[in-house]
Image (cartoon, rainbow, N blue to C red; front, side, top):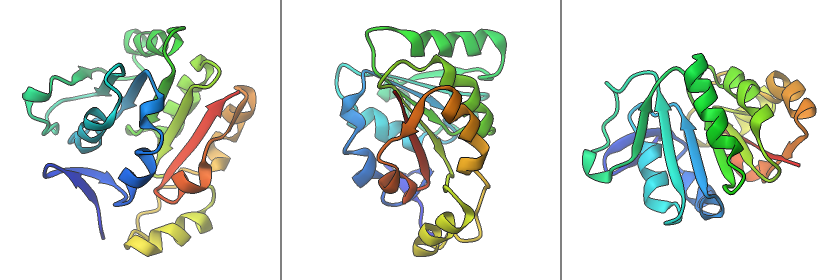
Length: 187
C-alpha cells in the first residue's frame, strides 16, 4: 500500500495527490482543512499555496501533528462541531473577499461536508477525503495503489442531499476521485 508523505511526514493521501492538487491550489485565497492529524497534507498545502492564501488547519488535538514549528502554520485545536469552532469556521468561509477551498478530512467527513456546505459562497470548493462516487469506483482506483481493503464508505449517496440543497456541482471530479477526494463547487 502506497501513501504520500512530505518531508518524511505521512499525509495518508494517494501518492498522486501532488499532480492533481497542484493544478488548482493556487486558485484559492483561503484553505481550511478539517483534520490535521500528522500534518503531511497540511505541509504540502502550505508549501504550494499562493503567497496571498491563508491556510488554517483544525484538529481536535495536536498530539499527532509532526509539522515543525518553523513553518508557522495556523493550526487550531477544536472540535469543528462545537458551537464556537463551528461558527469560527463558518465566518472564515463566509469572508466575502476570499475564495475558499474547504477540505473535510476529520473523523466525520460526511457530517463535516453537510455541516459546512451551506456556508459556501459561489465558486468556493468543498472536498471530502476517502471518497468514491460508488463502491465500485473506489475499487477501480484503489486497486491501482493497493488500497482495495480500505473502503471507508464516503460516497455520493451520503452527501447527495447536501449537494442538491446547497447548489453544488461536481468539480473536476474524475481527477479528484482518482485520488479519493470528492470535489464540489458552489454554483
